[in-house]
Picture 1 (tube, chains in turn red, yellow):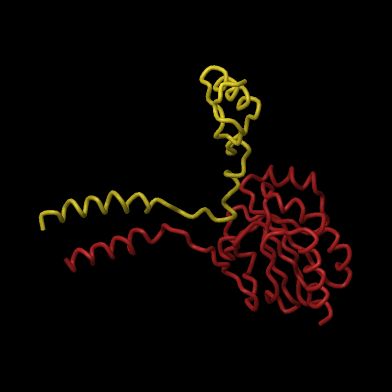
Picture 2: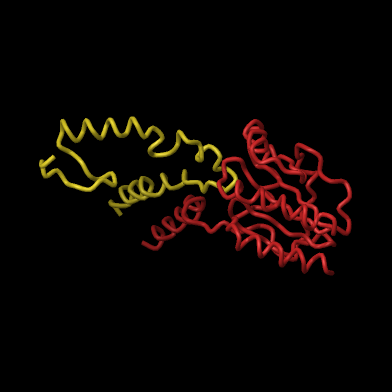
Length: 168
Length: 73
């Protein structure tokens, strides 16, 4: 019988490995350097000079409800903190380019929007939800991570964190 | 020892289907978010169906509707 138990173990661990609830662990943590985005083949122009800037990188999609709420807030943040050194980059994970274009027509913004058409970068970063944003300090290191968007609450957190990073 | 092949078969039947389970990552949910994927993408059609079920088969309830076929309507 021990052999049978071994068989069972092999079956469960080997074959069943891909199944079951697995908490999506965010690949990128606070303190990590943000991966090189140009290697992921993004559509659109990534800002050339981000040295010494505080950067908000936001992963979003046109089909995601909270992303719709987050865009006007990010636009206001750009207006408020842009002159002091905040750069916002929104990375769409839309597989359909037209969906993204339609979304941007409805929510026009002045910050940079690029598209991760192959979903390479988002896979590498392994976000836990949509939207997820990363606040990078002036050295390009991830300092704060926002999972989801919860209106005024998230906005206040953004403001507090951006202020603290800009102040340095 | 006679039961082993049977056990193995039962295990295979039980475990193999779970191998196909894959977690859908948050950024892969675009297709799932399409309106056509919702349980009730055609509210008028649903209402008509419900009406038919209710009046011809005396079946209502189970869809968030109160009542359980008392025949009083």
